[in-house]
Length: 127
Image (cartoon, rainbow, N blue to C red):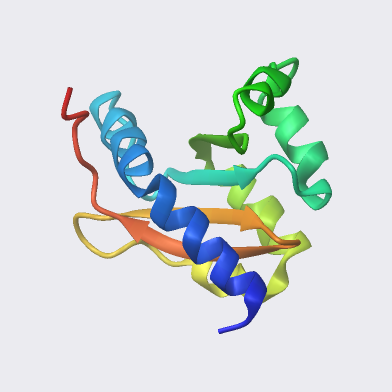
């Protein structure tokens, strides 16, 4: 595993619970796992600035930095975003094009200039 892959794995692990909650919420809204993906983006990665600004325009990332935290954009997005990622990161195109395993939701983690694909099992917010 490269250093960049390890960073994305760390980012996934750090956000796994919240990503699972987002997947659960999307399913509760009637979306089907083949219709969306969960996304987790390191806001500090300039490679993804344009996408973050498109998905979350005018979000106050500085307030998160001011708390000493790393800003991360997370959410459910349409398959159109997966198609975009397939074009800009062709190495993950095949993984983005297949349906997720039963009971799981496809998750794309963007950071360190690249994309890694994971799956999460949807979980309700424990609080």
